[in-house]
Length: 210
Image 1 (tube, rainbow, N blue to C red):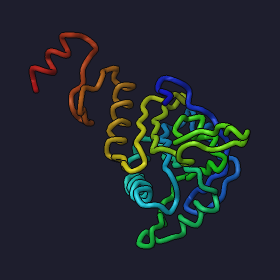
Image 2: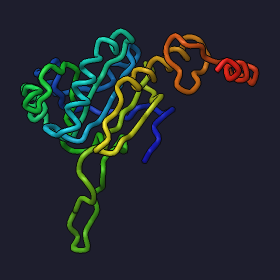
Image 3: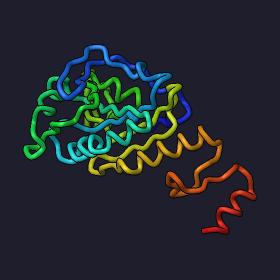
């Protein structure tokens, strides 16, 4: 599993569904560089079980992300047509109707491969045929990208394990606090709490107040 933290986010241009139902043929994260932070996350597949709970939870918190100048973008190996159909399906029927942030189609699986979250790989069999070993879907990878296009945080869950959107917001707050104040954020830090300077004295003072 590649560690992308501290590196430029891999680039791509792909089809996506935006605004809950509009097709975009040349979607790219490049549009956000210099303007917004990005939470880019992968999920295994449309019309599954854990996935709609995550996508709807992101939508429920979308105003909080926007207030922090963060764009949320999802991605799976499904086609943009599958995304569109899922977006038109009511949540009570297993759909994600109401989700408005972009959902990228990675039908070729190259985006998941480049971000190193594809749950398997292509190989040649003894007969010389190309076969896929593993599960041809993406793990639940999530990447926080700063305005310069650099990955600052990543987390990758196995498919049965849903993510915490609240924790994602906490990491956004921590990154933005560090950028604005130059102070580092200790364990379980939340917005509004004291942080630390990178000195032993600061650490000792912080620990003494716990």
